Image (cartoon, rainbow, N blue to C red; front, side, top):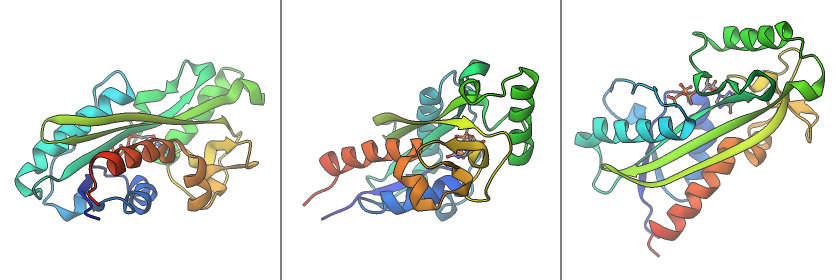
Length: 207
Ligand code: ITT
């Protein structure tokens, strides 16, 4: 079976870890480290989908001189949305502060300031939007999500970003306390990736 080359355009090693193994079943996966450095695309869209698309198109253009013929570029924009806070931090999830720990503290401080202490008012979801492009053309654009509750304090050291705050009721623990396999069985990223992989199997692989 011939497998396409897919460059996953992310600077986040946590994302790369969660995507590379699965995607490797249907494609030969490359990361930004396989190429000369390129500037980071600006994320100014109003939605995860818009940002994922812009990121994928920007990386495809920036990497064009170095890409193998027919290579594809995949990019993701992801984030956390807390319902009681009108979707905060949303598309700005990576930009509310410079590092993960401060971002987690800000989220907890906002919930505390709003008096949101019971489980129901702390409901949230993770969203992953992915776009698969080749050259200037968008071949597929998908979204995945997973619902949970913001924990009162961070728990666990697994995953990355907001994972230690994201309590997942069916597991009775936060994503930060989950193994990679546990997170990959239910996560927003895994849901989006499943649809991208189906698209690749149906349209881009040759028996
Ligand atoms: P790239 O743009 O290079 O892919 P990034 O980390 O900037 O990397 P995003 O723009 O998509 O990625 O921002 C996502 C933010 O949401 C970032 O702060 C993450 O820590 C957080 N986030 C997204 N998915 C997450 C997950 O599965 N677990 C924990 N935090 C997550």
